[in-house]
Image (cartoon, rainbow, N blue to C red; front, side, top):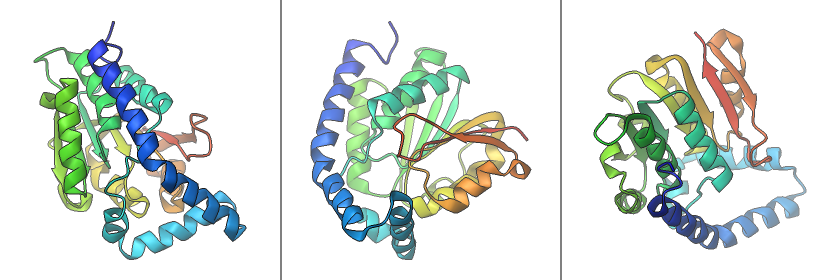
Amino acid sequence: MNTLTSGRVARLLERLHAEGEAADRELHAQMMAAIEASGQDLERAVAGFIAEERADYRATYRGHAGHFLAVSPAYGRFLYAMARACRASRIVEFGTSMGVSTIYLAAALRDNWGIGGGGRLIGSELEPAKAARARAHLEAAGLADLVEIREGDALETLRDVGGEVDLLLVDGAFSLYLPVLRLVEPQLRPGAIVLGENAFERAYLDHVRDPANGYVSQSLPIDEGRGNEFAVRVA
């Protein structure tokens, strides 16, 4: 038995995934209908969305304050496994939302270091209402002591993450993927894992896929079509 499969956390995650699916169902249907109507493939459609988002990402995501935009259960388990595999003690998450991915990562910290044994997750969330709900969910999971959720723009909140980073999850405003990575990059230890969920932004992908930038990177088959990218800091 581990923290992730314990009754308390497992039941909470099951409930949150169901709530997220219900909250986001209409949004997903609208997005797919818009893509189909435009005659574009997913990559072109997302590129258009990123261009619009870049103009005012704060306003764009204010409109999603009620949406979970959460990772899938399969990707959540992958997050847990990666944090366990690298024995992470400091994790940074860009785009906390309702805290679903945060629970998976915090559960790994608990199992890596035990109660009172250390481990810290620093998350950033633009929307105060989402940050409040994420904190409540972490309290319900019994993992709040491991997590600091910073409200505001990640380009400000993640300027100082307090030390060497073992794992970075990038899952917020698409247009900030590369700026956030570059902000945290000096703190990534050799061997650190960088995970881009919904990593469609071309500049971000070009950066982590270019060996000159110090990464080994590849796309993941988990939730195929959602643009999941796995990178390891090697220099």
